Length: 365
Image 1 (cartoon, rainbow, N blue to C red):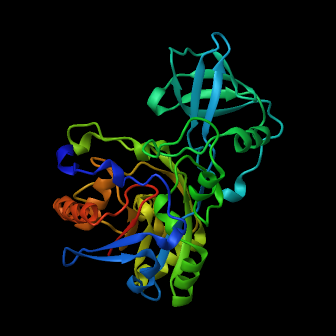
Image 2 (cartoon, rainbow, N blue to C red):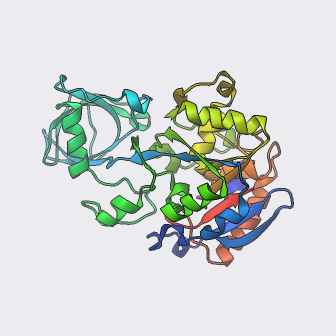
């Protein structure tokens, strides 16, 4: 398929720069796949579209303050590092390495000049860093000269919230508001460098209302990487590559999904990250028990979904891999879902919906 098929016009003023004061106050566009129609509503009415026994799968990753500022020791030039998610490790197994005097991490690097392996830097008010290997978009490898506990303390004091490039903020430390709101209420496991933004719409009250109604809330962890914002530059969709991201699915979530499938109950994914994790691990669910690994699943039309029955998501960027995913979900197994999504997005633009990470929500059922 041509990437151009996934383009649409979006007025810049409809790109949300701030979240609404209340998490669950966003508007909700409900897309009905069977009739190719939609309904306007609000996130607070979400219960109306659920059934008792539905399994709501949430991504409990926690965004870390992943943007770090540094100075080149040789020239004094400024450098920016964006931490990439770590290798997949079950949450219960994580232990700080207090013995080692340095740790290694993959980062995306932004600088005004050419960097070479062996060059050293000093993080702002922090430890020394050595560039070990240049991999550019795949992630440069750096050594940070402190132990992991010291580094964790450093990034949570000096790191910046890695807001997406279309949310404009002045350079410098992140506001307390963004630190709180660019995080879901159920974020537990640190490691993401981008928020699973569909989950930003849930308040404690809304989540508790769904639970009382009989919805089963089941967590998984996928540490979202910066590739979620990377545009599709290939002329044809099939030429795009999605960066691998680490995931962990607890045994209880695996069991809840297996039970729902046996009893023909729905699996509702909160966000494209949850959907990609579930569909990427789909064949492994038959074994049972906790699952850990990485997924680089790129969902685009046509795609046969084996796990997920409904999807709560946000409104996505033109020609993005996320728009391709929701287009595939809008018409499973076929290539015409983009036409339905374009009509729905045209309505959303005309009706004044707010787009992207801090914007409104879309439920596809």
